[in-house]
Image 1 (cartoon, rainbow, N blue to C red):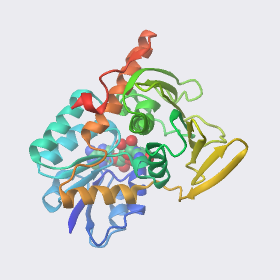
Image 2: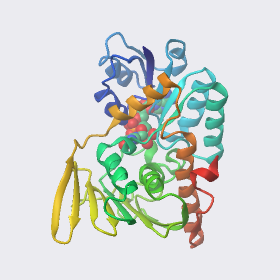
Image 3: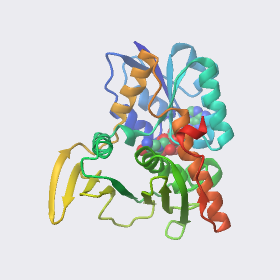
Image 4: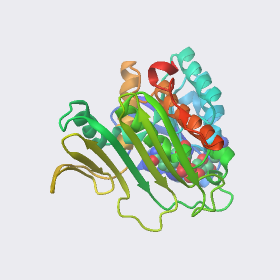
Length: 333
Ligand SMILES: NC(=O)c1ccc[n+]([C@@H]2O[C@H](COP(=O)([O-])OP(=O)(O)OC[C@H]3O[C@@H](n4cnc5c(N)ncnc54)[C@H](O)[C@@H]3O)[C@@H](O)[C@H]2O)c1
C-alpha cells in the first residue's frame, strides 16, 4: 500500500481527489494546504486522512506526494520532498526555469525516487488511441497536427496565475505546455517555430492570455496550437485535428469522440468520457513506483517541451523565428 499526501488543495486537486480510484494500491493519508479549510475539505473525502497546513509535518508518514501548487512553489517544495526520499508527482509545468527543472531531475535521480509530471492529456484514451493510429500510419502520414483549446479563465484579482513571475509566463507556459508536450510526442524533433501571444481580450493576464504556436519538425510536418483563456464562446472547444495523407482524424476532446473524416464522410471510431484523465495518470504513477520503471512523462521528457516554450518566448521578443534544434528528448538528457 502506497501512502500519499496531496500538497495543495485548490482547483486542480479536486480533479485528482474526484477521480482517485486506487484504494487497493494506495491511500491518501494527508492533505495539505495553507488554507486550512481547503485542507480539511479534501481530508474529509478520504477515511482517516489528516489535514495539515505545513507539508513538512506529513512527510514522515508518506511514500509519495502529489504537488498541486502555484508554479513558483513547484521547485522549492519538490526539492524538499525529494530530499526527504519521497516519490513526486508534480502538476505541470515542472518548474519555472531550466535550472530549477535540472535540479529537480538531478535530485530525483540522486534519491532514486520517481519524478513524474502530471500531463494528464497523455493518459486521455482518445489521445492514446490517436497516437497509436498515427504511429501505425493507419491513415497514411501525419503532416499537420492542429490543436485548439478555447476556454474562459479569469482568476480573481491577486491570484498567483495572473502574475507572470508566479505563473512562470502566460497561457502558453501554464496551459499550452500540455499541447507542446503532445506536439513533440506525436511529431518528434522540432526544427523551428514561432509564438505570437497577446493579452488583448484577457487584460486580467500580465502576459499572454491567447497564444498561437507553429512548429516545423524534422520530417517537415507542422504542429500548431491555438490556446486562449479569453473565449466568450467556442465551437471547437478542445479539439485536435490530425491531417494525414489519407484522412483527417479529429479528437473532439470535449465531446469525447474520435472521428475519421474522409471526403464528405465521417465515422466515429471511439468514444470516451471527457473528464480530466487523472485516474489513468495516477495509475501510471503508482505502477512506476511499484515496478521501479520510468514514467512516460518524466522530468527529461517534460523539460523538452518547456525548453521549446522558453525558446519560442525569447524569439518572440526579438521578432525572430525560434531555432528549436537541440530541444528534442534525445538532446536534453
Ligand atoms: N492538468 C490540468 O488540467 C490542470 C488544470 C488546472 C491546474 N493545473 C495545475 O495544478 C497546479 C495548481 O493549480 P490550481 O488551479 O489548483 O491552483 P489553485 O490556486 O486553485 O490551488 C493552489 C492551492 O495551493 C495552496 N497553497 C499555496 N501555497 C501553499 C503552500 N506553501 N503549501 C500548501 N498549499 C499551498 C493554495 O492555498 C491553493 O489552495 C498548477 O501546477 C496548475 O498548472 C493543472
